[in-house]
Length: 312
Image (cartoon, one colour):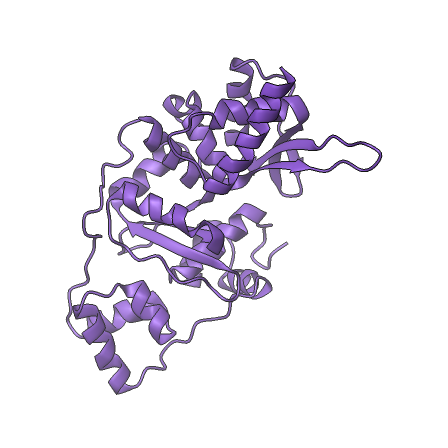
């Protein structure tokens, strides 16, 4: 239990770390999740995320901040360089009368307006691994953090969105890199499609591309060695997330002939999982001839598909 009166789920804690890494204030994060600023600070401390310094810039550093911003650097880049928060940089620029760039160059604000396979994939990925943040007086932000080994997937997302936003260097504390964009239209679209609510848009629930995005964001595929004396390895599929999303996933699988799965509570989140034949059928359904996928999961899925074909 947090000192804010409610228990945060593991997925919410991951979102909090991602939002904090982009410079969002602890107070704003706490308000969104219904806990105190101190509870948010405690989450960051337990996950090895150090507090950012604020108010420590010298006059020369403040002048350099202005120079860097006018030269094209983003708020997040400057904040990381000087060891302060992005809101602190924004405040300094505002006090100096400098207009803040409000949108990313080239960003496709209509990127989520259709339901082609690649769009459905990225919507699903952000449903699982993205964080949508709203703060009074600021443009809403969509942020996502991935492990350093998956950095190229953030490059692919940035390319899809058509923008030039930077991807942060890998954090030495929690080993992830961050990417974010600001857009009223994109943020509102993710929310209205069911990211946080109790109903996922029907145009998404029938898309294997959407579900592959969800699995790439918060799922796992694996091939594991069984204990001796067995010589045959074990294949496994698992995905975690919010209950209303996973219930739609189970219904999707049933319509595709993969039955017998259920949504189960796992600590403070929910999960769907299976092994052997059903796991291999799910891998084939989601990943065979995929238009977009996380490289390391696609590689495991290909091996699972080969096993399934060999057993047929």
